[in-house]
Image 1 (cartoon, rainbow, N blue to C red):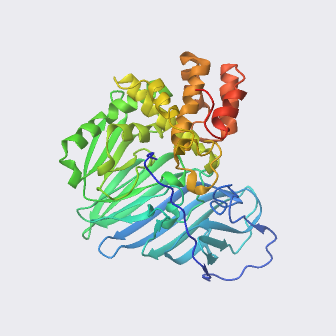
Image 2: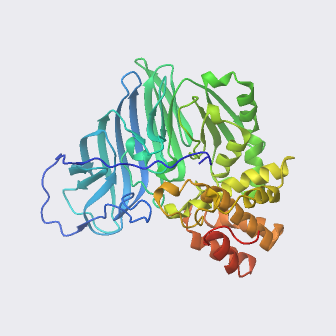
Image 3: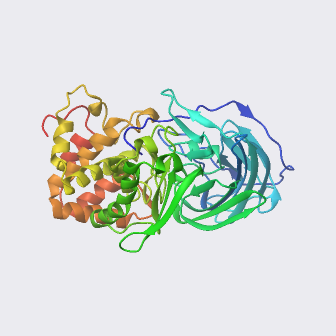
Length: 465
């Protein structure tokens, strides 16, 4: 996410009960947990199963801001289940099935509990389908920052960090449960619907067009996206042959500066490959969304979303770096977000260093020169005190300072070996801060306890740089 962003927290509505199926009987399993007990977002995610694939179908009417949708998820039970939960905010559930049999569905805030007709055994693969419709929610935090389904002048933009994806499809909405995706979006003819992965088909009939997208690499729900509107689309390839798909809002398409930044994208990806290791996905690109459509950029997988009024080279470098740090190597817990944002911010410093700007050391010195009461020293980057702080300055700027301190401690050769090794070791997986510190010490052969204690976990401004 762009460092100019603000955290968006979900306010849960009151409990609602929706009965959709018959009763269950003789079930011996237990319900899966209604949350993964994440320290910052304890109600996000659900226990008892692991999702392998989502198949999402959406039909959107921009004039009414009305969404009709269905999701079929394929999952494997990690325990005997009599019931399980999905995260789902707003929209009306019309039907729910488990393995083709009708299931009871109970709504309580953003928890959708499904009770199948028959118990699901541990290790069993099962398929769950939910149909729904209504006006999708836009979530707003105390700083008036928005996520979820964001309406635009001619369409919509769906952004999900940290909670918003559950406003447009039911999911196991936590970074720890990654899955592959198929997303089919039907919109009025003349509009474009962009999502993650690769475009597999475009079919127009009856005045409406359906765009079908496939994401074959595992993806966390918070970096799933849909952008609907009038976009100029271009397809090309990087110098190494990787497909590039760019979608630029037509109101920004005539802006020469925006076109110049889009033109830099292939070179940024190739630069990232040299510094961070092989690009982790089968395609790349960017969505330049309408001006003012969001208050932040987001590292949505394969193609980041950047509002036109925030679109510059620095932001594009940041969000593309997230393809390695955050999208491929994904945090196990929300408190591990500094692994995403510290590295993406440091990527900006490296790009500057490699392209005639300030060296990384000068960026570090600029941050360290800030007074002890500055926000950058408000808390340790690995210990955000609440959900409201996961997008705060210590996670970004001090997180980048931690990365620079590692570089200084081990030397450039070892540093780049560590970075490339890290993205290879945890490619398409989840990792924690503890995984990272252990990996760095094992790969470098150095005891970096003082560095971790001072820069990663220490309170306040360190006494010396």
